Image (spheres, rainbow, N blue to C red):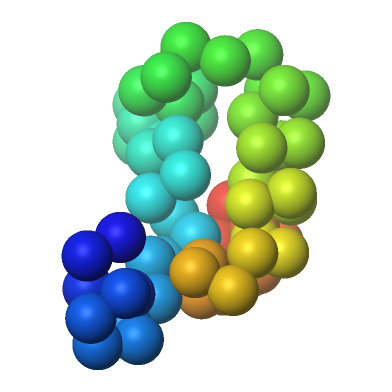
Amino acid sequence: MRDYIQHGRQIPVFWLGFQRQSDKSNIWGYEDEAMSAVRMEGSALPIIHGKPEEVFD
């Protein structure tokens, strides 16, 4: 958040619940539907850059 406040640098959307390569689960332990909701709502914030559908499958 510091970089956004000081310099306007947005946080990449993939930082919202990093996805494991092995089984596509997320590091926060959220169920798929809950993590999808977090990513969709988070991507609407001006601090977040990108759209979940462009990063996660």
